[in-house]
Length: 592
Image 1 (cartoon, rainbow, N blue to C red):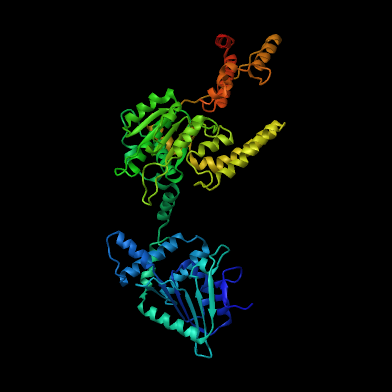
Image 2 (image 1 turned 120 degrees about the vertical axis):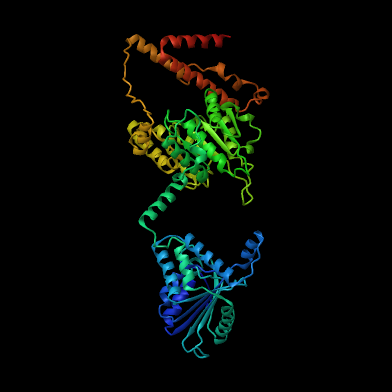
């Protein structure tokens, strides 16, 4: 079936139509384009066919309705005059350049477009008053008449890469090519009327676009280097007086902590959370407190007063309260791990800090479910787009990777969308599903060395692709080999002790005692032959009407029994005397 209609399906694209017309009609003298919007990054797609075309004109319609609404929102009146039209066109051109997919071809095409205007190879105008939504491309030969008609294409395609059908995922467009003299004449007459009303884009003005975008080639190497540092490290290269200089008495300004504060704040903005995993003794509590202070003063303050929730083990609560108060942190609540169910208004909190976060890793535990609900609940802060802000989460743990793949996933899900993450791996659920399955399969492998090698591969992938982008971690060795950190520590007289490897001491047992030890360990830990720890699983065997009063009764029973099993095993490894004391108390409690 012969038709003059075509879409961007397969090879039947507007780009190929342009190619065919220009290659088979060498006498084209005029090419006029009327487009709803224009992309310089799409212009270079047809540039090679325009070498021998003397007269090229492009008329662009600016989105008047959108601009009027923007002006009205600011209490201004859009007059549609030449100056305003020019400003809007240049703004759109700059945005086009800055958001275009970066590649050598695209950059060269944009530069060619700017050069063509500067050398008057093409003329370009922007219409000041009408919201032009039409798309018309007119091809006229040198001696245009009824017997040498020319062609006109009209339809839905704009002069952009996606409108031309320049790549596989281009827009679906619907166009028609007309070849009668009357059709070409009608389109030409309409174009001329609109062209006469357009505002000329002069070479000097388009040159400003180049100067005000990344196309500017007048930067010095030093300026380029500084721009690279800013883009790579974000605001961590800036100095923030709210978070690092206002230190209470007795605290020193340490450069490695300052860097951690700035880096952590950027991770909060980018990923809604991160792991603070410096080794023991480097001041994770201080760093977490400084990040909280920076967040408080940066998160909409003073219009919005952020509230911070700190979740800590009971033994660490007093230390956290002392640090938070000394640093004058405003508007915080602090609760212990076992009190999450007492939080009645999770929307109240903008930032959640979880110390010893590796304890919240089992998604079958009720305490994890409480924490996940708390972290995933939106805050009360309303953003500019009308939505409510996501909660920010800091997970403090010296061992973020010392867990099963499923445990790591559970912790990351506290601040990441499992199916649409902010990481390079968008679908974390799919990623971890494979790692978890691979990890489980290794339990049945008889060869220990093969298991170890496979585990390393699993964790390397998790560490490189997920943990590393979300983690701040320094060891004492890192501080010693980093010249700036080492100089800072030396200047302030801070010395970390050199810790030597422990010496192994082997205890030889007599054959009888060795046999007794193995038998005891088997009785303590074997699932079927050993102690069943029924006393600690009492609620598991309650009648259904009584049992329903307890949440996850079976899980809680198993967990408590497992704790007692681990306790007794550790006690026997501690000393026989300690083991006998614990075993005696265990027997007494059981007999009661």
